[in-house]
Length: 260
Image (cartoon, rainbow, N blue to C red; front, top):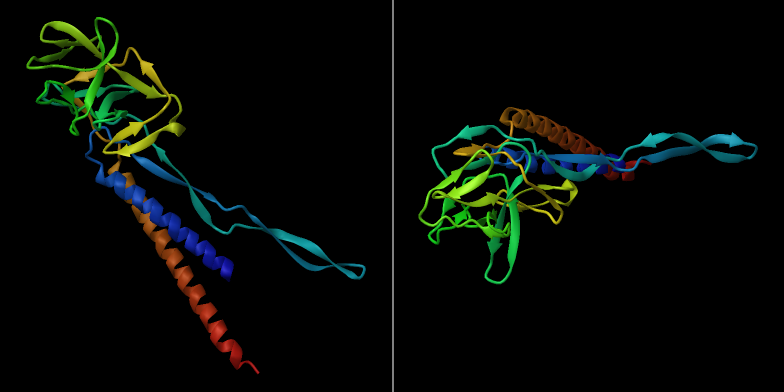
């Protein structure tokens, strides 16, 4: 009976975690470049059940009955990196990556700097003339003259991207976007606000960048709603099992003293 309680509780814990992931997916269904996530569970190690009913000579010998699973636990949260739908926009500072890769940005906190990666190409020009995202982080590109990695400076000029991915500021070739991909997705960390960090990236030289386009979220709201209903049904089932076991255990404890 106690084992059943542990199993039901483990189901409630994993169900709550799944619900949290699904809620986050639905909440970001309209977030540019957002990648949906799935929570993966794994079962506890099976317990081998034995008894002593088998008698050999004058000794009780263990008799294997079978194995018993005591529930599930959270394994990991897996990100789906497939591309979302690409839509047209009217802004010269909107960009989308058609294929693999992430835009590189740099964040300064006054002392340190951190490199961030995102699929959200909704950029604008800040008051200092740099190309930045909605959080004010500067977009990184390669300088066309020396190949150095630098923040893309636009100033008061117009931005134009040709088919080769070259960035023209006014009529002058100035930059190329620094696009990277993750060598090992196991080492990727989510930073919130649609950002990722990773200490192992590969540079993509010939990424296909589209101007006046934005990549939408790859969340399938219909599938997420179906998953939510399945999680809710599982949660209710585990609650019912837990309530039944609790009532049975309570009855056993309260009535055992009445037995004469």
